[in-house]
Each structure stands twice: as structure tokens, then as C-alpha cells.
Length: 377
Length: 227
Image (cartoon, rainbow over all chains, first blue to last red; front, side, top):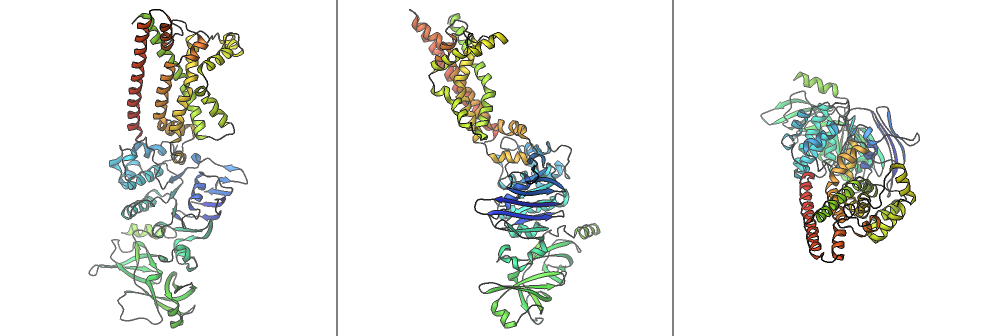
């Protein structure tokens, strides 16, 4: 997929002036606080709004260009859309809702068949029901299926999980991951929830008041400490690609190899060699100038200080280069002074806790390895 | 009941049916225009559609007579070109009834269309549906309760129309003498009290049947449309 966007649009309170390009398959996250202009951008990609100026290009085709006067109607763009409020047609049952787009897809065929899809989404028993009699999670699953069966070139997701409770969110996120792998649909996912983004996205676009603050692969964006005010002070942390190295079944632990060493995490149910994605929050990382002993923490990764970002208040962020990985530690100003830390200095990062994303190796740059390890198991 | 009375009843039903059926497509179209589009002349169109509600029916009949009479420009042209004569014929009565009951249809359909979430239209667009497709597969089915309600109200109004019909097409037995005109004629003639009472009773029965029918239709449609 190749998506090239340059949108200028007056949003009343502020001006949207956004340009970014994505040149890889997988899931692109549009991340930012509410009111940053995320939904406006995907509405413009779909053609549901006409921007004041700029262009939208998908796979070399110009869908919108204010200078050239091009504006392809939404129904001809072949772009699927999952709305926050599902927007199922109330007069049609679930089956007819699912087939609405499929019947209008022309010669395009979805990469996943009807039966396989309803199986994956777990909606087989709902086919004859009217949307009124569905729960919120069921509605979003049907809306997702409806968009996928349209066999779109690109699928836009406008905070589709925002209205769901936590178990429901995780359930649908898992289905979305499977869809990404099985149906191979490029997606643009609007979200203000960092856990969604770090789990699902391969590419991340950070928006701040209508402007692009960063657009890069997920690992690069999440370890940039200058973005921490935007990527969530408390939750901020780096996302690292890794592989399952070994299992210690006696202690219910799994070792995950990352570029800078390996991390012991609570046992995960993946074969040795399988790609996983780990997230290390900055507040869960301590720094030591000498290799510490007598610690309860299992995970110590060595590296050098790459950057320090001073913040107002008690804390500051330190970015540590560990081979190709970038870890971030949030420490106090006092610790910085006491340890006399400076850029270029070797340190040891003590990691208290690691979040392992269930199946989040993603595709960007790891597609080959992903497939190989799968084939080998 | 006499043959004349049954004739009046059947004529009334026929005129009301043709009036509502003929006006329905136009009512749906204008309701959609008023509910979903914005153009400079919209207020004028809105006023024009609702004019028969506020105008005395006799004035409506008079306007029809001066524009569609055989010597009038439009009426003369219709007669010369197509051989259509509306004055003093039941088709003229149907036209008068259609115009007078038109606002009821438009109003009900427009309200139903305005109640449809515009987001559904956007969703249909993202699923490849063009404008006509969306109108047929989303707007029309979701506005169906309003369309039925409007049609039934307009049917009742057509059955009861008096002023416009008597002014435009006169009171000809078997051609334009509908139920209200027959009641009026019976009251005017000596010894017609019994006939007037029977006809009035018939009108009341028709009105009640219409109400019950509309309620049943509304329930059925609600269960289909899932709202």
C-alpha cells in the first residue's frame, strides 16, 4: 500500500494541516488526543468530507486534488470504513448488513470468504438478527465484517473499540490482528488509546493540534522521548520487536530475545522463534552505573545513554541505546545529578515489568522472519 | 342502501385511491428534496407544497377551474393535444383531491426521512452505493412508516374533500358526486334525511377502518424496520 496525504482543512477552532506518507502494508495508527483532527483525516481519505485544499493519493491513484479539481466520490474509492458507532442498517438483518458491500464490490473478491469470516468474528449465530438486538461488541464485529467483505483496497477504522469495555476491546483487537494476517488488508486505525496502537500498529502517525508531530515505524516513534508529552506521560514507553528464545516451564517464564539482550517475561504460549512485540514503559525502567547484584528484577540490559529530555517537575526521560533498540527510563532529576549521568555514558537498565503484546510482531520489516518462523514450527 | 349511494361510495374510493397513488411518487421526491437538500428556492417550494393546507378549498377549486378549464390555457392545451378534459370528470376530482391532500403526504414522509441518521447514508457510500442505490436501499425502506402514514392520512383527506371538488368538477351523479357531495345533496333535497344518515354512517365506518388499518400497518413496518 502507498498512501500519500496532504490535507488542509479549517476545523473552526484550529486548522488541520497534515501531510504524511505510508509506503508499507500493515496497520497505520493515527494517534493523538481527542480533537487532534484524526477522524477528519480519515473522513477525507474516504471522501466523506472535502478538504479545503491538498491531495489524497492511494497506490498512485489521485482520489482528491484541490489544484487539479479531482474528487472521486466515496462510493468509487473502494475504501472500507468502520465507524465508532457501527452504523449498521437497522432495517436489514446481520446477514444482509454483511453482504451490503459485498454485493456492490463488483469483480473484487475479499481475501477471506464469508463463512471463514463469520467464523473468525464469531457472529455465525447472529445472522438472522436485527442490529437492534445486538450488543455493542457484536455490532462492531458485524460492522468490521461488513467492511471486510466489501474487499476494500484500504480499511479505515475510526476508534472502533472506543465504546467497548476492556474484555470486548481485547477480543476484537485479536480478531483484527487475525484479519490483518489472513485477509492482508492495509488499515489506517484512528485511536487515542496507546495500548491499542502499540499492540496493533506497524506505522504510527502522531498528531498534535492538526499537525503531524511524527510519522515513522512504531518502534522508532515510541522510543522518541521528545514525543513523550504526546504519547502519554504515564503510559509512555518503547515498543521493541523480539523473538521467543526459550521457555522455563518450571518457573512459568519465557525468554524473549531483543536486539540488546534478552528479557524474561511471564510464560507466553508461543513456540520458540516466534516473533513477539514487547512494550517497556519508561516508568518501569531503573538505571544503574554498575552492573547491579542482589536484585529481584530478572532483566538487566546494558547500553549507552543516547539522549536526555528534561521535563518540568520531578522527572526526566533518558533514552538508552541498546544495540538497535531504544529503551527509555523515567528517573528523577535528583538521580540524574547523583549518578552524574550524561549522554554517551554506559548504563545498565533494570526493567521491572514488561508488557508482551500477544501477537504483535507486525509486518514492517519483519514479514520475512515472521513467515519463516511460522513455517519452521 | 340505494344504487346511487353505493355508486357514490365506490366513486369516492376510486378518486381517493387514484389521488393518493398518483401523488405518492411526487410526494416522496419532494419530501426527500426538502429533508436532505439545500438550495435557494427551498423555502418557496416548502410554502408552495403547504399552500393547500392554508388556502380555502373553494379557492383551490377556483384556481384549478381557471387554469384547467377547457377554455383556459393549460386546460385547452391538454384537450387539444391529448384529448384530456379534467373539468366535470372524475379524473379532475382526483386531481383536486390529490392537490389538497398533498401536504399531508409530504409532511409525514419528510418527518420520517429527517429522522433517518445521515450517518447511515455515509456508511452506504463507503460500501459502494451510489445516490440512487442509497435512496432505494436505505432511505425508502427506513421512511416506509412515514410513507404509509402519509398515504393513509391523504386517503382520508381525499375521501372527505368537498370544496375543491364541487368548485372544479361540479356535482355530477356517477361522475363527480363523491360521498361528501352525496351527503350534501341528500340534505338539500326534501325527504333525504334517511339517505344522509346512511351516508354519514358509512363515512364514519370508513374513517374508523382507515385508522385501524394505519395502526396495523405502522406496527408491522416497525417490526420489519427493526426500530
